[in-house]
Image 1 (cartoon, helix red, strand yellow):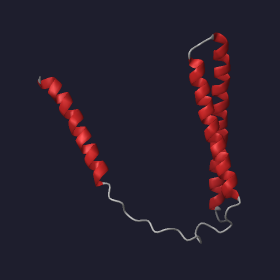
Image 2 (tube, rainbow, N blue to C red; image 1 turned 90 degrees about the vertical axis):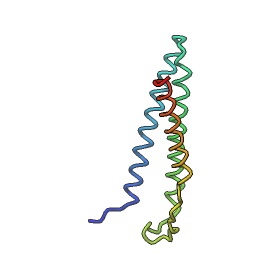
Image 3 (tube, rainbow, N blue to C red; image 1 turned 135 degrees about the horizontal axis):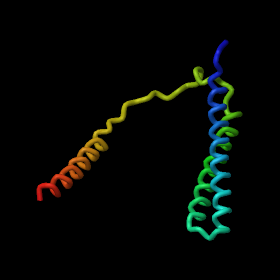
Image 4 (cartoon, helix red, strand yellow; image 1 turned 30 degrees about the horizontal axis):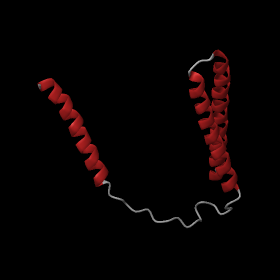
Length: 111
């Protein structure tokens, strides 16, 4: 029995949509209950509900767009060649940041 890779991706997207949809509904219900109590957290829960709803809808749109996009298996498609990109600038910036933070902490203890 062979494993269909696209089926696994489809199931992951469906699970993500269900979880995000449930999170959105729970946040929106809490926001509705909080609006009645005049609590300050109502706006935060409404924003979280909108955020999770947007993610669920985006996942649904991605799923529907890619569902009919290609019938060629991923193994047979022409994939671009992966090349190495040097990350020396980011590593240097992280190193300088660590040195500054550690130096400022030590400066407070010494002074």
